[in-house]
Image 1 (cartoon, rainbow, N blue to C red):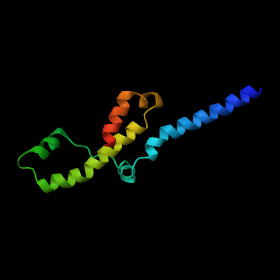
Image 2 (image 1 turned 180 degrees about the vertical axis):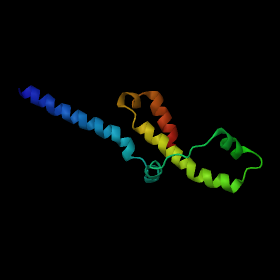
Image 3 (image 1 turned 90 degrees about the vertical axis):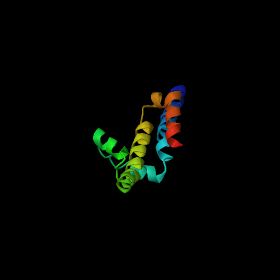
Image 4 (image 1 turned 60 degrees about the horizontal axis):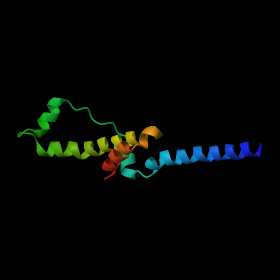
Length: 103
C-alpha cells in the first residue's frame, strides 16, 4: 500500500508539473500580448488587403490600421500556439514556430 500511495503522490506531482509547464508559456507572455490577445482581429477582404498595398492607398490610414491590427493578430497567434495540446506543443516543429513568434 505504501508503494501505491507514493506513486499516487508522484502522479499528482507529475500532473501539477505538466500543468505548470503547459501554462508557463502563458505566464511568460508579456502583458501587452496578454492585453492584445483579448481583441479579435478585424476581418479583411482580399480587396481591402490589395487596396492597402496600392499606389493610391492612404499611408496614414494604413499605418493606423496596422498599428492596431498587427499586435492583435500576433498576440492571437501566440495565444493559440500556447494552448496547443502538450504532445503537439512539445514537438520540435511547433517549438521552432513558437520561437519565431516570440522573437
